Image (cartoon, rainbow, N blue to C red; front, side, top):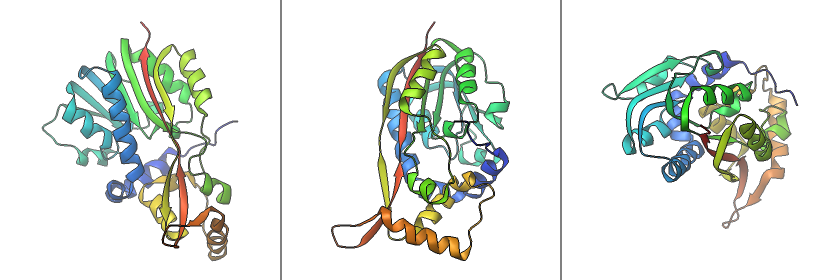
Length: 258
């Protein structure tokens, strides 16, 4: 299936607007960054000359890398320059701001990391090719992305959302690009809310509404959305109705074959 054209200017705008609220509301993304870091710690060394992070955002993963690894040169990428406010000036950080699909990767990298970002790529295979080309032999590419069940409730009710790769498709694409897969796994996680309106607020606060290019709510469509979301609800132990939102993270720890 051909992926929809992703308007990167809209993505940048939505995430910039969510810059202050993201840290508070992106609980799943923070958990994913921690899990990804745990896997990096398990499979990869703790000392690096050159590290490049794609889509650093507010720094969930970056902070863990800086606190726990010895990194001589860290290069951070994101779509918009405001991300620099999240990082201390006294750290060995340089920035490569812009759409990573339009930028050249830094050279001679020992680690490329990325958490909850690569699902936004129009040409993921191009990213994999660049990563392989710019990594040193036996260096590491470690990322999390999302699978096909991600935000399934939103897509089924509005038709809005990204096209995600299955774990098998991702695995095949990585192997074709010359990566040794040290670890690949997926999880299904659910957030529960007291009403569908809080789900929309959560998505807006985490920048995810950038997928809804050209989509506008009306009073009627909002009412229909709330009504049809009942199918994704159930009572909790106290008898209160809770509305579920699905996240489907995939974790990949890779090594460039020499």
